[in-house]
Image 1 (cartoon, rainbow, N blue to C red):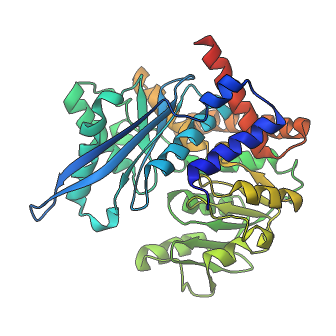
Image 2 (cartoon, rainbow, N blue to C red):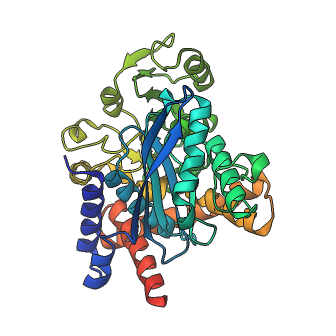
Length: 408
């Protein structure tokens, strides 16, 4: 199977086929500006020393400071971080926010660390990359297995080391420490605004059936939001499997079960299913909210959903895109569908720089305006180019980055 970065480059090339770009610019977009690697020493709770490999890829800053999350995951490696950084550069451009693209990671299983060890690792990440980050240079955020508490530790360490107490170097912080209203649910909420903008254009019914793969921060909020608007969430899953109920799940009860047992499986009144079985369910909207490469050439033929809305990064391979297009299954691509998170992160950065705090309503109103406008823009361009929405989104993003690079 291709690596995540090979997958991302293939997507770039597919977009270039429907709307060719100048060779010098296009070749430049295949390479990040800078790749950083560091070893983070951590004193474990038993006093023993341990070192963790960490990465930061700064892909393109033509449109603004590098922007992108930091993930803590045992399978994180430079190739994955490089792909995520490229997708972030495109994502910021497709929703037209003044940020570039970056990504960070640490190869670690955070579940095996105590809270104090996790804090030492988080603060160590700041020491490792201190000279390469800042509100005008590179603005990290949470990602897989990192959260507002991790960002608070990092922002605090940055302030101690630099004297900059604005908080604008890290986003996704707790509200009481400079975080933005609406940031926790922003990725899922932004995806819902994209869905609303395109629902009629894609001939979806007024109330849809939904299957959500992944029940972490993004997937859980997605299930909550779609259910709160009267849609029927028929299945959810986590890394250990999923549950299905044809007439719809009680999401609040599933959340309580997950909190108590640690899994969504074996929930009363539902049928246990695998993640693969979830992907193959008959539904109106399938929402992948887990990791990369979930929908591939070997399982795309099993997909029965009318629309796939990607809240995960890179869940569909290019080969699967072709198969889904032939089946008339619409894919709303990640660089549009899940851009609500980075959009509200940018709002947080702006609030920190101005010393402001916007209300939840103002954040939601601003987010809806951006997601509605750009979703309709991507759909319109896909119709004009007679191509899928992913290639249309890539074309729009590349046009905006190219223009910024010319101006520079």
